[in-house]
Length: 395
Ligand SMILES: NC(=O)c1ccc[n+]([C@@H]2O[C@H](COP(=O)([O-])OP(=O)(O)OC[C@H]3O[C@@H](n4cnc5c(N)ncnc54)[C@H](O)[C@@H]3O)[C@@H](O)[C@H]2O)c1
Image (spheres, rainbow, N blue to C red):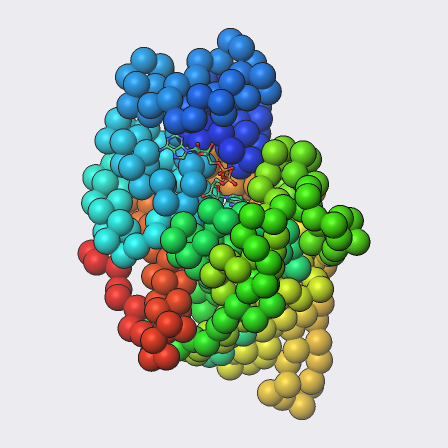
């Protein structure tokens, strides 16, 4: 039996702590962790074990510990430096989404990804969820012919709770929720369209949250208390994949909020395909939906985290009009089983000899790059009122 892959986690926030537990079983062993905040290291020791060494610097950790793979779950603006350091040190790297927050950072990271013979992956776990794997294979089988048109919906009922309580979560930090949240669905849309985006026109706004409340108002002091639908228990807050403690509970109606809470995109693809994308943070449901119109039929896919998956294909271009439906099983676990799927794929790529690592890494890079470039291009379009060209990933 193969030895487990010795793994380190960088960034011990909600996601990093979740990773640290997940990647300390079946195939992986947690060898060290790192967070630049000593308080998070202390929390890590309490949750993960006093015997696992903790560091405040990635470089020191990689010098002192015998590590094969690094999982990077730092904040969105902090993905690139630890990823480059880990790649330079010859480690397999899985970096959380979004890949980065600028085209220039993507180009910089690409240089290091292209130099390594180790595995590079990005935290797009939904690509490894049974529903989206099946959508992709039905498209590859040609069940609806050539995909010409796509429509995707990111319905984020939890948007208020997840993003609009935290004053550090503004444009200056996240850039746009199209990047921080919707990058998963933008990546899936690109994947299903079988091409990369070349141009985007978008409209959007902050039409629901923000604008009224004093910036210092917090749920814990607010007279409305639990009668407010957005009241948040800062001591223990349930995310869809884990529970977090001590979270920011500033008012979602704060004057300082500047992230758009809805965006509508029109996208052109290199293949000639066209798509629309819709993101709303105040819809009643938490789900993702895709309509894909091909030359033979139309595919609908429905996703939610509990796994009520559905795929329906309608064929209308013949006298034998009919519908086919599938309900792919959800194995459970975070993100409709995608978190575990990603973990197993990272392991498979690390331990399987003879894989075309350069091709796999280039695909990972492209998925991270085009979802990032599309989100940033759309935000620029919203700000300027002009269509924006998406630069191709440089070779
Ligand atoms: N794939 C998914 O579905 C998914 C889900 C949740 C979060 N995420 C991503 O995971 C990342 C972390 O999210 P979170 O909610 O856990 O954030 P968080 O703010 O709770 O934690 C981030 C941690 O990283 C640490 N950190 C930042 N820069 C560092 C550096 N250079 N070196 C060492 N430590 C550093 C911070 O001190 C903090 O403790 C984000 O990029 C987020 O977008 C992905």
